[in-house]
Image (cartoon, rainbow, N blue to C red; front, side, top):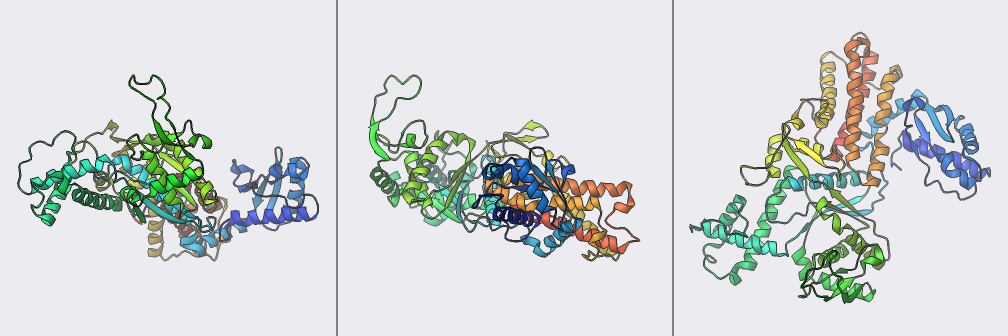
Length: 581
């Protein structure tokens, strides 16, 4: 429920009052749950302004048929002065037509709520941890990381807008062998910075030029102290410095996209604090970890495969295909074992967890969900846990696949991409498909000034509104709420579209789907442009009607509120609402 009254929240409350009255009269049993009652726009706008399924979902509890219950609900709704008509459709859906005054009041509500229009108290301050990006700190961010970064950040903003308390977290994978490889690669560049000829980069080390400035920085800080020293003297030092400097590089790349995390958690620190050991001890106490034989790999097992006893987590108890090892035969932690401890750590301070992962991690979803379900039992409270899988992006230029980058050799960096097309284009485009759907990012198409380019289409609607305001001011007109009753059916249709924003925010937050906001803004921009185009053929439909100051003031006021809704939606997506293009 929105914390500020809007059309949908007001009519949800009205229908609740009608149902309570029917309960008092005995037409509904005492204590009837209204949880599944929805108020939404009808699928076909010609059927009315709002529709409710109240009779359909409550008829069983009322021990009557939906149509009979609908008749009782409609009788009461028709007494409401804001309801022009209430009709029953099909087996018992109720369609409402509202008086124009309701929609005029909504224009005023948008104006008075401004930047807060659409905000909701639905989240009730629930603490949600959203972990996203979490790329290995071994290189600059590239396009493989970009989509998940945008999805995670926009989802975080959406949840905040809907009243949740959100922590954006980045998990630094700084405990594995790849970090030792990074340290050795940086040490090589450090020696190069000290004037040594290092020749070709040896096989197995990171060859990227992006490590050259890191080597130079460390040479300035440490001098030649470790140039000829044995690896045992410098590996730990170089590992820490390399991770720190790579994370600075990654943070700078993310900032280009307008993304800043609240919390950076280190896998190495997790191990140092003994968190995996604590997790294992707790899970053994719950009989959720036991020593057992690892099953042979599915299909044909390797000839040298022998059963080995390992500590196994009972993930089958929570719906996984098999129990999973938390340690390897050498006693070190499996990635799953460490991940389990990490999620346990997150659950200590959060009411709900969301992980945004690349689609290549799909195979581990079941086991981590099983782990969090086990931890929920331990916390004595359910911990809702969602994994959002994000598909890779195919980069194109004018329809041709792109693979190479001049500066990094084998990939397009996020920085190169943002420098070429801008933050707003990257962010909005990444949200024009569901995260789990494949997508193409064509450098030529995303900057096209056309209806087929969603980011242009939405920003152009906002810029058009501003240019109309500038033109109106030059001609002596100003937006005014005084004569809104002069607005006709076409203008009210725009208000009806704008009025869906608050309910859409709640629905998108509930589904954890920020892309719904991008889809909505495209539709709202489309409705605005369609109305604008009416004025090309019909001068009486323009926002500025030279000989009618009252009507012009009302239409400008409407346009200003449409601009406000577009701005609020773009702010959730982290995209700027431009004023001229």
